[in-house]
Length: 116
Length: 115
Image 1 (tube, chains in turn orange, blue):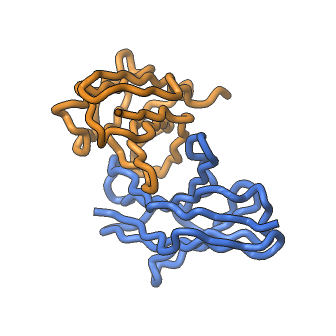
Image 2: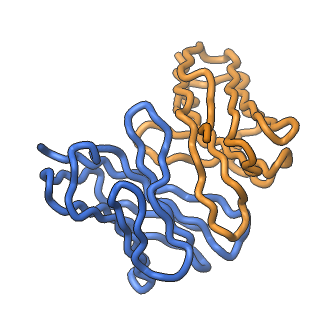
Image 3: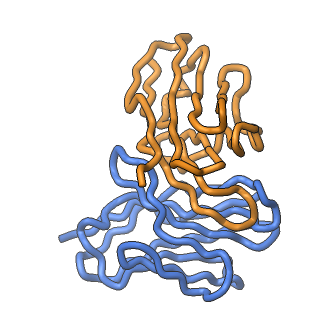
């Protein structure tokens, strides 16, 4: 089966500019996650969708970050305006479910964002 | 909130020797535990998980992990390391009692297998 697809793979922008990332999860996976991975750290959850509804966005900096998952499939994550500290790899992941069943998550290759 | 500690920044091991990557966790309820591996410029790949049952879990590429509830540990092991096992390894935990609770990752361990 095809894996999680993300684009672009790399992006360089200046601070205060905006940027958008796209993710297409594994077919049939109801749950989609966006993570931020700063160099030398583990991934940190930004937002979790169950179908097209948000179930956890408590760690999303909502003053500058936004995300949507229209029709419960593809998702976009946007940063506007970007700051230097947003430089990181943005990972998208999907899983069959998010409940107590302990489903593993499948990750895309990530988008490496550099803010100058 | 749940958390994971991976105490070593880097693990060096000679090819053919046993490999161990340490992980301890903290959750308020019962844990669901996961190991992921990350190769350069790639996303995380799932290796194995502990949900319930046998404390020894076997996963991909010859890896296994042992759940120890009394020591709150979930160390990753491989009997004979390969050079191709050189990568970044992440341990992660979520609380089984809270259905949508987020997965908390450790900071990762760089494994270097020396030929």
